[in-house]
Amino acid sequence: MHKLTLAAMQRSLESGEFSSVELCQHLIERTKQHNETLNAFVSITEEQALSEAKAADEKRAAGDTLGSLHGLPIAHKDIFCTDGVRTSCGSKMLENFVPPYNATVVEKLKSAGAISLGKTNMDEFAMGSSNENSFFGVVRNPWDTERVPGGSSGGSAAAVAGRLVPACTGTDTGGSIRQPAAFCGITGIKPTYGRVSRYGMIAFASSLDQGGPLAATAEDCALLLNEMAGFDPRDSTSIDRANDDYMATLHQPVKGMKIGLPKQYFEAGLDDSIAALLQQAIKELEKLGAEFVDIELKNQHLAVPAYYIVAPAECSSNLARFDGVRYGHRCEDPKDLEDLYKRSRAEGFGREVKRRILVGTYALSAGYYDAFYVKAQKIRSLISQDFSQAFADVDFILGPTTPSPAFKIGEKTSDPVAMYLNDIYTIPANLAGLPGISVPCGDVGGLPVGLQLVGNYFDEARLLNVAHQYQTVTDWHTRIPG
Ligand code: GLN
Image 1 (cartoon, helix red, strand yellow):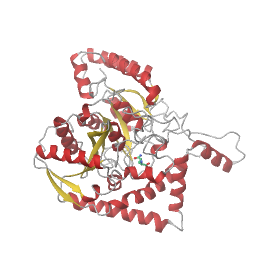
Image 2 (cartoon, protein in one colour):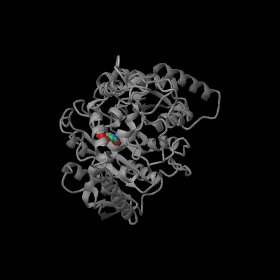
Image 3 (cartoon, protein in one colour):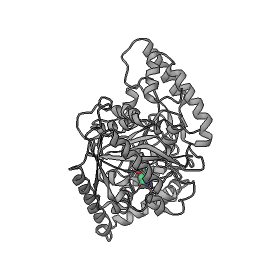
Image 4 (cartoon, helix red, strand yellow):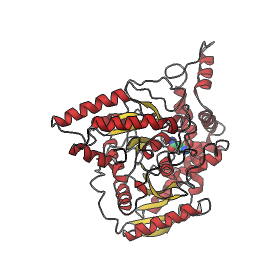
């Protein structure tokens, strides 16, 4: 049962092959069994899930109208607020935080009938590329448990790859959906900034954060995104625009689509084995009728440095709310207010979060604001302009998702810059607010590799369409770790 895609589970529920209770029960047992090794879940909401599954089966039996995800199991990254269920954001700071409301994404998926089996592990406040920054411990990659699953949505990616659950929510500020999807051999899409509501999604860097789905296939991502996307008056950056039907366009032909290959993505720094796999994928897409052209993204090399000013600057502001007064961890016996702030934050935040807050406050300080923050914003505009120019000629941009396959646990922890460089191909889309998808395209020594397609604003439907068509002629997305 657990090997089925979300779409296949949906068909089986409809035909009565198994019930939602049977399905959820099976996946919860599997999760309990494998979570000891993988550590992909930080909470399993068994009782709630099974009672919702029972209600879903009853509703189906009664012949009621059903939502598009009726009775289907999913899990949420622990960054999304869940009413009555602890939402830790991977931090000691929120170890005991139980929100009194649901994030819009959680609410929307729930009203479509999806059943949450629990909350998935993540890097603390979504800061990381390896899931080694979680207060709840490292997540292990199901393809090789000595390796990282990527981050920050590493728990979600490992849970889907290990077939503990068919699909999960994630968030992507600099690559946190696409990079773990690539490392774990699954599909993940970061939508256009403003497409999915950020209400109730704990903020890291508000001008970059965007929620999206992770699942085995592009089709499953489309099923989820259909419900997740949409205008939300409670998020001031949400875009008021009609929803697309991502399922309806999956089967359109790729023929005639023009895909750009940025020279800068195929230069030094990219693993030879990954470059070779991308060439194979290009051939497959050519056979489907896509046309490839070389393009330039001139300021690509400035994306990581600009991101590591903008993201920490925004995080230093967003995380100021965790001061021991209203939310989260509070130190014992504070002497005075200043002591309360200092010790609550010193005890509640981990090393990487503190590093980002320090970098951010420094970059925003009066003496350095122009030299760092303003300059980074200018680079951000240049990167967006590069993309706009490229999209005047091409429909999509293809490249690697990551420079290498999943690395070993501990391999990059002592070198933050080496860790930051892992997101060199994913960060530009966040800086520009563009949608991007990572799709499995091969393996290197048994470790999955992902290719990334970046589309123009609000072109999620066509991104999912091309990814789905690619998956009809390849089988990398069907592979399951032993
Ligand atoms: N790895 C990047 C970082 O550490 C991106 C994280 C994310 O997308 N949330 O900031």
